[in-house]
Image (cartoon, rainbow, N blue to C red; front, side, top):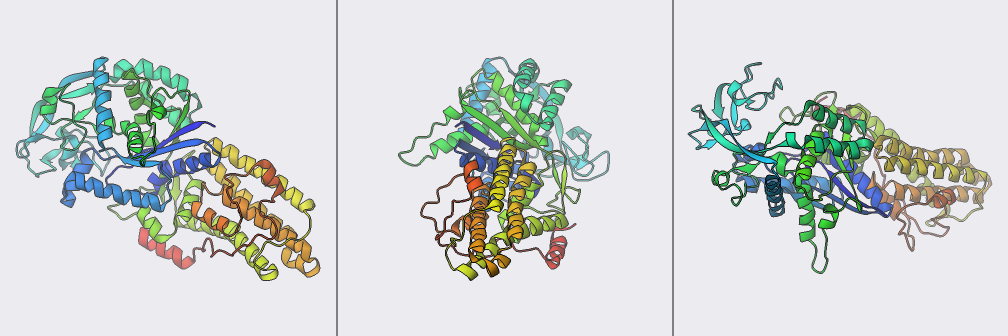
Length: 570
């Protein structure tokens, strides 16, 4: 079995993420990691909070907290939400770790040794009142295009125009509010991406052939436009320091690396964090996943389309430039955006569903299934409460939940607390087995191809096959004339429930556990279902004790729907 390294775009530290962030990176990565583990592969799923950069400092300032304390609290808050969604990371680290500083500085030194970093003087806004140069986001003022009076020096949030700090009318420091600003000369480090472009192009020609069109087209668009040398240092208090042994003057000035230089390195660093956090007596070899690992590890990244350039062009350029055999991505699963009724999610306008509020409303499996079944793979997709309600009620409550409840409840009422014996399988059971094996193969094929909407459709078809069988056999009628025939039907349906428990686990892990736990099997170690087992449907034999679980999925009522619209906007 292969070794699979899986990463998802690092969630930024500044605030709880919305459903679009969840479906665009972490959730599909978790579904895929769970599936691969069940199929027997060696899987390492790594993620972390992205903690450096201007927004983290500004958010800490607004909260009146030291930035390190703010980031620690925000990391814990985000991790609690991801635990609530049952994201089964092997490790969830922090880009502010010592390991990330160590490896980021190593990469910078190697790039410098190889001639891919250059020190350049640039002109930048300086605030005498603050005694420091101000990064673009630390300069605020009035947008010259739309008149918005809280525009930042990099972009106007109101009209989205890209800006330079010197474009702003009445610019002021975001730290002190001082309008006494000057433009002075300062030095920064630049990554010479222009020199690395031919190597990046050759690598994408080799590695990008199997990427989905969304990822490959974005990467090639950047290459067509040409890679530009990019400043990789900033004037901030919080970040990975420029090493004094290589750049003593810049280190003395307090320069730190730009967040987009150190954040991708955190994938490697978080793996080292995972190794360093190993329990006593356990040895974890982090380097075997990242260093000289091309022939032994398949590396899959999950991200939304706005993150694609950094992971397919900028970071590979860095890895190529260090002239060391660091693992580069094999497959980039890129997603379009999930919108809220066609518009943006907005914290400030209280518009849309954020992940902590989602868990406050309904259990995680409702969200996990809906988001993956409607993942924005081929185009942007829109979340609406009406669509969510229809999906939950039809697929989860009716197709799966009702099937489980009526099979187990009816069998308990008519045959007691053990799986009934009944007669031998007949033509209907044979047809059901063939169809179940076919649909399971379709589900596996789509999961292997990372086609999540199609995988969800195959899973839903598996659930529907059970309902069709039940309607065909109608055990509530069979029992009036042939008790053994009704017992056979119910036993077969119970085997479907157990099969659903196993193969639904990547999508709805809590519900899968509830379905498994309904049966008291002497050995229920089945990780997956073989084609032969799917066709036979005999994993749960007669005489096995069972219980009827609580309702798996409650239907969303019209009253609930209206309450959601009012609370979250529509």
